[in-house]
Length: 122
Length: 261
Image 1 (tube, rainbow over the protein chains, first blue to last red):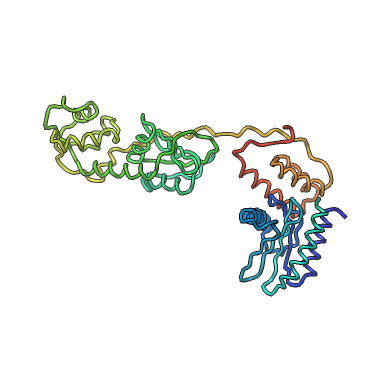
Image 2: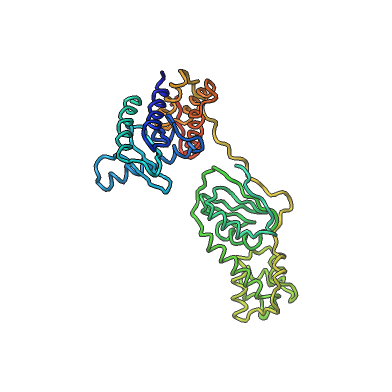
């Protein structure tokens, strides 16, 4: 199995096994898609570019406001959540979740997935 | 350089065009008959109209240019100090107001007392033709003539006989007698060819990401195109190619890097 296939399998597993996770994608720091398990109606180009920009901003804010190491960015909309977390130095794991999502469980699964992705990407 | 917009200054004022260029952050020239206004990121940095250059040329063009205009996009790097567009628009409106306020001229005192520019206009004054007609006849720029003429009127050296109708200002028209000149196309230097990338589809997609990190967009594009030729249905490869092309165009002004460096 190729590396891309392993990464895709991992994020599909995250989407399928974590309740209320509606999609996930791994994007590099420049906004290039590494693997995606997002809904077909989502513009993946935009997801990639915006995730990279948001992650950069989140990291900058964390640093500027002396909040230690960056962990994640979460955005809440009326239709659900967007959560971004780092997986290695060069990539970000983006996760889309529904309004009723159990955030504690999602954070836990995201952290595990990010650790595995980090190893695959290194 | 490619043409973005063209039209007739009888239907849209040049002052509106330059304000649009400023708001839109336009980069490139606006061509009119007998002149050109150059913008960098919405800043007016160079103007040429008739024999004038700089602010005078920009104001004169706003007052007098008629006929066809063309807006082109260009990646050409232009040097120049930015000229405030709003000031130029206001100045051109003021000149047109003054031109309209004072009509035909009657010399009241010996013309020797007047300086050369005004003297040229007054030597042609016959008490019938309007200032606009005299300026069109003598070729004296509006920006050089109006203030001295108004000053002379205020000091009683000349008398304005009647006001000018707005239509009379059309006598100042500078229209293209031939097709307006469009500057030669600015062609970017051809990018050096990079060696054809090799490896599996997966390797090429990963390699493209590494190349983007190194800002080697041309090589990244080649790697992704090769990957797509292996798997034309790969959505990720297509998306990444689109992203690379977008990044490449965003940094088009910066020096490019290839594997040959």
